[in-house]
Image (cartoon, rainbow, N blue to C red; front, side, top):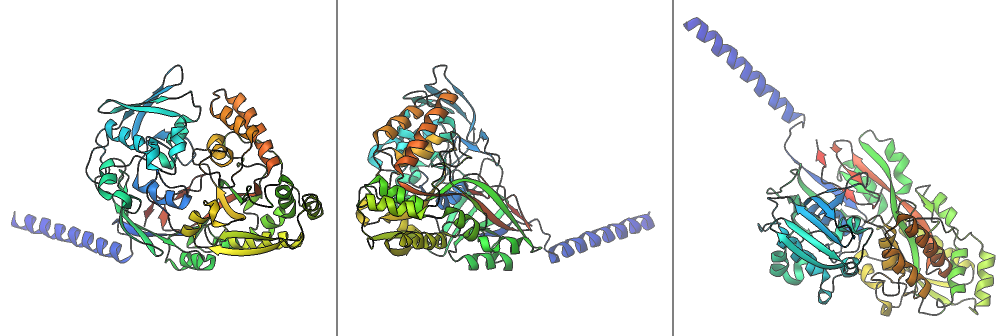
Length: 514
């Protein structure tokens, strides 16, 4: 018996030694399953972490990790449940009812129930709060009711075809009202949601650090932390990916895509995008009140060369004011490059050669944005303008181009459609009262069409309405219509689960670093 015991003990020691050695080798080789830190380098930093008051995609890259919504889009842009496990719409299309997941909590410990959802939407629906996304929901939501602890319903002002996809918009995120009350005006810097990650630290201009919400009700986070770093210089962002200083970068500079694809430690994926890049014009300021001038600028810009030479094919010339990936799209046709026609229209409008105009751009926010703006500057100078060029830091820029009193003439910016529907792609930008109508366009025909499109349920009828609207918008030319962007994302090969949606959201919810 003693000999048998000794043999068993010796065998156990060998097994334990082998297991210990295996663990040591695993740790030495970096194969530990312990969550790791991930660095995401973007062209700029978030403007606001209050999803109901944010309007830029970089902010949404962060808020989509901090908050949950009733429903969301998966990687294929299909609507899937999030806080709502199921929903129904009344026969008349004027009431939507959502049954909620049970057990979800905000990061401050308060429950996510029907009353919390009601309070969150009543916050954005309150015009006095002056939230940037007020009109997105106020246009179609009449009132919200908590039917029971885990059932919430929305009475709609009219049957609204894209209602469900609008609830999936990043601004449909459910915020903690306790957090709003506790943080006050600082809520945009100190957010409280119910998502898988929560804010640890934000040093403006340097980094934003998110850590796991250990009480998350859904799939647990797989990273120790996510650090978002604003790196506007294209070369610096690409170098960070190569050296491993960054695990994920977006966008990958067009000039580095092919080179990085040859790096055996990096994956580069070029995702489709419903983002349109454009140059807006102040249509209430001379000489841009004249539609001939606005059309002249469209003829003056060589968009094909921008796509081929600057973006190296990582975009396509816009054929309408929304992307072909957006529901309701139909091609209105691009303005061809015709500088002589541009000069003729300017002469007809009485614009004198040497007229000074201002062109503003961010740098690093969009793929090759400064370089595109400089090319447009040269095109406009070639038809007789004197163009004053100015680069802006993204945060300050988002305030400047939204304020007509700031003195802009032309501003380079873009518009993605997080709900993936033409209503959200057009109404905020081109309706006279649109919340994001930074060009100050006012056209009764366009107003009528966009209002009709919002209130029409039949899909075929809606498509015809938006086809007419897109033709009218092209004719009025409040933008220099440039291109539909693509989203090149670089990821280190030891990172998995990173995707970019059509809306250019870099989704890290399921990311894991090995």
